[in-house]
Length: 442
Ligand code: T4K
Image 1: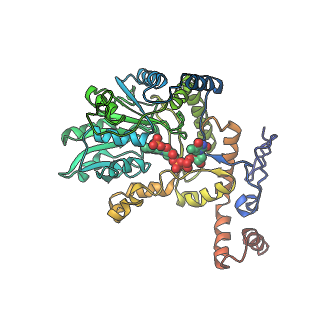
Image 2: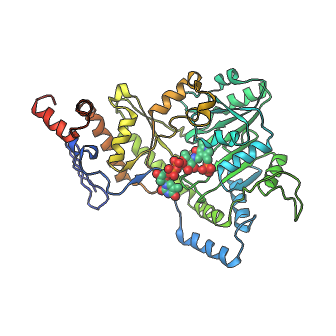
Image 3: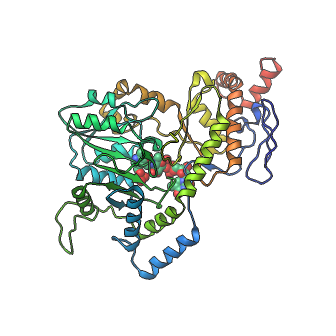
C-alpha cells in the first residue's frame, strides 16, 4: 500500500520491505546519494513460470521415462499445441530462435544479400552473417519501429535474395507492403517473430506469413521454454527440410541426406513450454494490465512517448517501451536510464545502438548511419521498462512516480552536473546541490 501526497515531490511509503521511497528533493534520488527506491533490483525480462507443481510433475515424468531429448513425447505435444494455437500446418521446435533463424535461412535458400532492419536484436543479423550472407540494413518507419517497405527498393541489388522482417515489440510489420515488394522483386520473405508469439495481423495469427516465421521462447520472453524457439510454416517442403537440418540431416538410422546441425529442443524445455501454455492467457492478461497502468500513469509527460498496441488485434503486450525526446523532456534517455538504474529499476536500452553500430557490421560499413537516420534517432531515445508477472501495480506506480520526479528535477540535475564537471569531479552531487541552493541558484 502507498500513501500518495499531491505536489511535485513524492511521498510514498510501502508497508512491505520491497520499496524505499521518500523523495522530496533531488538529493533523495539514489544517484545523488539517497536510498534506492527499490531494495531489490527490478529487472526487465524476469521469466514467467506458470504452475510450478505441474512443471515438476512433467519433469519427474521425463526423468522416470529417461527420454530427455531427440523428438520426445513432450516436444511432439508442444509442437502440436503451438501449431493448433496459431492455425499453421507445421511447427518445428528448436533449441533457440537464433539457431532456428540460421536453419530457416539455409533451408529457404537465402544467399548473397538479405535485407533486414538494423533496429533489432543482433541475432537477426548474426544468423545471416554466420553463414556468410550479408545483412543489408534498411531503415524503419519511426512510428511503427518496423522495416519501412518504401525504403527497401533502394537497398535491393543483383545479389539480394530475401527480406527478413522483424515484428519489433510484437507489433506486426507492414506485412502487405513487404509481401508486395518481395513479389515485385522475386525475393523470399521471412519473419523474425521472436517478439510476436500470440499476436495477430488483420486477425490472422502471426506465424502464417511469408515463407516461414521464427518465434523465440527465451527465458526473457513472456512465454518461455528456458531457452527455445520454433519455426512455423505452411510450406510442406520447407518444413521437411528444416526437420532434417535441425537433426544433423538424419533421415533414419545411419542415413544422412543433408548437411544439418543440432537445433533440437530438449524435453525439459518442452515441459516448461507446455506448462507456460496452460497459463498463456494469464500471462497476457497481466502484461495487458501492466500496459494499461503504465499508460495511465505516464500520460501527459512532456517528451515521453509510450508505444501503443492496436487493441483490435491480439497482442502479448510483453514490452513496455518509452521514447524519450530530450528537447521536450529536459533529460536524455541515457541520463534517465542512469538515474533509474541507481534506483534499482534496471530499464534496458533495447535496441541500442542498432546492429549497424556493432561488430562486424560497423567495420564493414562505418557510414551505414547515413541511410539509417530513423534507426539512429530511435536507438538514442528508446528504453524498455519492467513488466510481466514479476511486477505488480504498486511497483509500476513507484516506477512512474520516479520517472515523473526525475523529469521534474531535470533542470536542477543539469546545473548540478555542469558544476560537477567544472570541479573535475572533486565535488559530490549533494555538495553541489547544497552550495547552489545556498547561493540562491536553485
Ligand atoms: N530476434 C529478436 C528480435 C530477438 O529479440 C531475439 C532475442 C532473437 C532474435 C534471438 O532469440 P533467442 O536465440 O535468444 O531465442 C535478451 C535475450 O537473451 C534475448 O533472447 C532477447 N532477444 C533480447 C531482446 O534480450 P540480453 O542480452 O538483454 O539478456 P540478459 O541476459 O541481459 O537478460 C535480460 C534481463 O532479464 C536481465 O536484466 C535479467 C533478466 N533475466 C534474464 C534471464 C536469462 C532473468 O531475470 N532471468 C533469466 O533467466 O538479451
